[in-house]
Image (cartoon, rainbow, N blue to C red; front, top):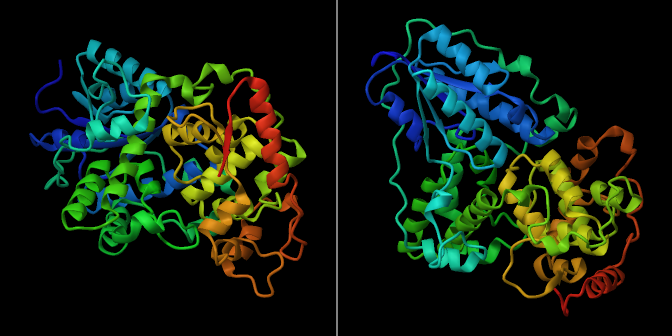
Length: 480
């Protein structure tokens, strides 16, 4: 058994912050030496290009924050259990703390780690922190998880959320540090190639940047959030997604900030709180029905006639932002340049791929996983299945978003289109031109190319989707 003075390993994962960090707070509570560790195991190494690049920036920021407190971040590569065993042998650590994850692969890994370490006499403890509410604590009145968002919102909206934790006042350090890999040697940004320099201008990393972003949103943006969040041509969203994805800010801090704004009369505060619970809903669904990550959440969709060829010319046009549908193309180009995509755009591009182009949602899910810096498994999967119609949704109709009417409604002055589509503009803005700097050179695209005609028109695509739905046995569809 380890002594009460032996070191505590804090295993960082999607919790790259020092405040609101229950695992770190507990490790520092009794003054034992703390060894912060990040492990590049298969789960982390398997991230898409943009998410892995963003992880590297987040780790660099965490390193700097720890070093500012006289501490260090130890980096190791390999299977998590093997790495932790080795670190325990090297340091004599008697405990390992971490923040819980909820996807099936991480759950299996963490369960194995906890069982093995406890059998060896190591105090292995997992802590909450990535969600507002643990998935097993939110149930319907009849038992079991919520399968529809609105009742879940009503069930948790007045529920208590843990108080915020300050960063540790002091982090005790070991007499000697274990060997650490150099972050640069991991090459986390290699797969981004030339796109990294473009996306970097639209991304900031670390807890300090996250806290600053939240403060600016609460001070300047939350009042009109309920109105402006649907307008892709204006800066109307919170901009917190990349920080929440890596845990550089806690959902608890966002929740308490939103509650305070609501008490102060901010009109958009409740909408913001609802969006936090929408994220929560995605994670609870993933925890209770992990098949949502790879298969149709509604099994009756297994025979739907989606196209499954990721190299089909129409799919390539969608990936390149050259479908001839300006809303779709602007959103796909925004993702190439910034690593993120406006939420309204995400709905439109997903609907167009799965309905107008009759392409399986998994192809879109995989493309997003490769290109989003704010990727997380639950939100990506639920978002795609919600748009495709195969996921959880209270609405009793088959959605077909019309990208032309949606553009007219939410981007009436075409600010979004002009920001991201260079073709046809006399003097395109930097954002639109940067798309051509970010994309693979072998695509051979130029801002001087003519803008393409639609690969599938809004009306023709709608008819195709409705016909397929009718054959499947569904009811009337609604065109939006």
